[in-house]
Length: 204
Image (cartoon, rainbow, N blue to C red; front, side, top):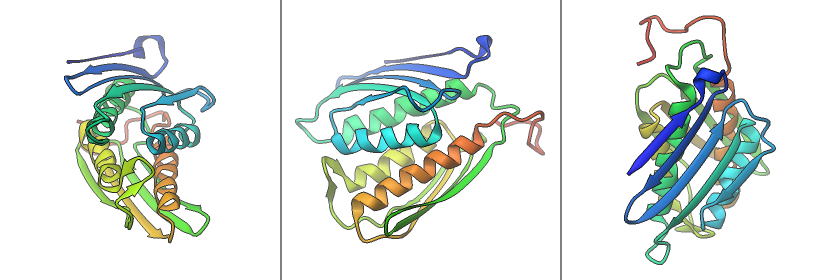
């Protein structure tokens, strides 16, 4: 089961989600209007912790994630359910998505790696992900589950996401530059504006 709450009524854009299944138990607390200094990530997957910490810091979000799950099987269920819970917390924090900038993009390097990310926070699910990873695992995170995490995040929230790693020889660098690019793109897209940016008149 899963439950989510938000605090839009107080003027603060926050989302809290508790997702429990037979495979995992995940709690997420997210504030879009944080500082990026209040971050605590404990998923049991070291590389995922590293990536989500970088994401929150560069998005300047306050983020807490605590996850437990069947890592004795593999990393799939925990990675997937963290993405689902984070996506639902983001959706709760955004509310009706009216009066946000909506679009964001970034091209961020990490040493020899370079990633390009573009987002549209309209509620239409689409994900095109190309990380170009070579190793089957990066730390304790399967390369296929890094892709799956990003796809699940976009399709569940939902929003439109394009991720392309343009350069890189080191898979750790490729992944980290992609998550930092995502952070900066989303940071721009969630900014408040004085009018609705939609020719349709709705972000649904």
